[in-house]
Length: 80
Image (tube, rainbow, N blue to C red):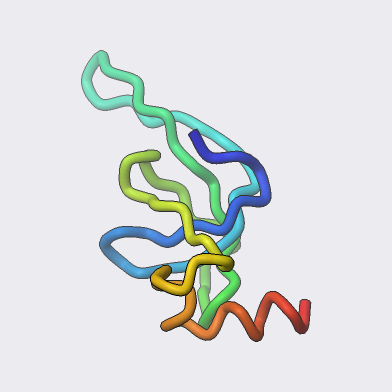
């Protein structure tokens, strides 16, 4: 489970952002939990991105093997 303010990346689009809320999507009679994420990298027309929880993974800034190091997020985090 992700917490509000966690840094996450979308598995398909590669969008990176901070979790600011939760929601749900209905498909047939099945409810899926979703994450609402405010993008922090790149230019986005959308104010937020919402997708099912299993489409996101946590980005750890303290892990040198993390993909965050490839995204330049360490510097972004220090500036913000």
